[in-house]
Length: 117
View 1 (cartoon, rainbow, N blue to C red):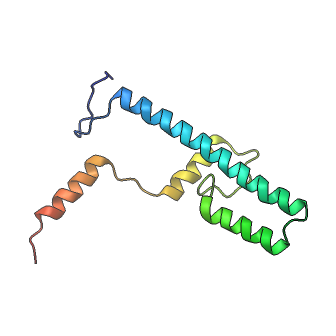
View 2 (cartoon, rainbow, N blue to C red; view 1 turned 45 degrees about the vertical axis):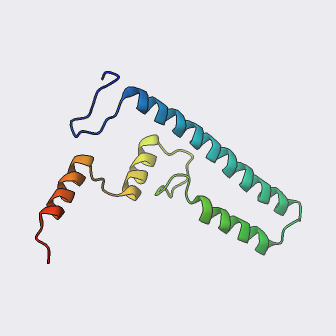
View 3 (cartoon, helix red, strand yellow; view 1 turned 60 degrees about the vertical axis):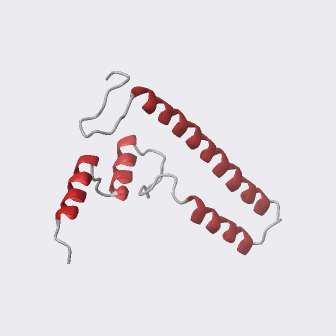
C-alpha cells in the first residue's frame, strides 16, 4: 500500500494516518493501564491499612468497575493460562457482529430510497 492509497469504498486510509492512529492508541492504552492500576492500588492499599471500612472499599471497587468496565470485554475466565486466541474470541463475541463501511453505506442508501410516508 502506498502513502496515498485509498480503499475501494472511498474512505482515505493512508499508511501515515494508520501509523498516527496506532501511535495515539498505544499512548492511550498505556495511560489507561497506568491510571487503572494506580486507582485500584490506591484503594486496595487504603483498605489494607485500615483507612477504609469494608463498605467503603466495596464502594470504591464498584465505582472503579463502573468507570473502567472490563479490561478484556467478554473474557470471564482467569487470565493465567488463557491463550491470546481465547481472549480475542471472547472479545469478538462481546463486540458482536460488525458492519463494514461498504455494507453500512449500502444499508443507508437503501433507507434513502424508501418512499416517504
